[in-house]
Length: 215
Image (cartoon, rainbow, N blue to C red; front, side, top):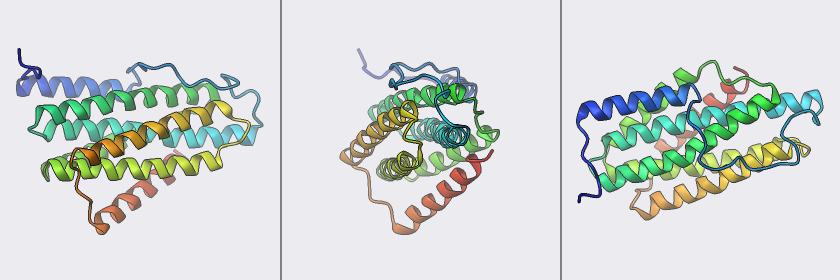
C-alpha cells in the first residue's frame, strides 16, 4: 500500500481552505499540553508587566499564524510526497504553539492581532515563492526562518517579566521546537540562502513584530 495517499487538486484546495480557517479562528487544538508555569493567570503580574507580556505573546501568536501559512504553501508546492509530509508534520507542531500562545493571550487579558488575515496572506505568498523556487531553496527558507524565529524568541525571553513564569516556559518550549525544525530542514538538503534574501526576511519580520506589538 502506498505510504503517501494521492489527493486530487480539489482535495488539496479544500483541505488548505479548512486549515486556513482553523488557523485564523484558533480552532486547531494543541496535541501537547501547554507548558506549565507557577500560575495560569496574569493576576500575579503588575499592570505594566501584564501589558508587556500580552504584547510579546501577541507577536508570538502572529508568528505562529505565519508559520501555518508558510508550511501550507510549501507543502502545496513541493512535488515530493515525503517532503510534503515533513512540512505537514512541522505545521502540526507549530499548531501547538498557536494554541499555547492564544491561551496565554486570554489568560493575560490581551487580544490577538487585528491584522491576522493580512499576516497569513503575506506569509502564504512568501511560502509559495519559496516553494516554487525548488525543494532545496524551500528547505533553506524553512531553516533560515526557524533560525530567525529562534533568535527572536531569545529576545522575548530577555524582555518578558521574570515573574511571568507561564509565558517564559511557553516561549522556551517553542524555541526548542524551532531549533529542531531548522536542523531538520538543513539535514534534508536545505540550501543556504543568499545574504540579500536573509536581510529581506529580517526586515519583513521587524515590520511584523513592530506592528503586531501594538495592533
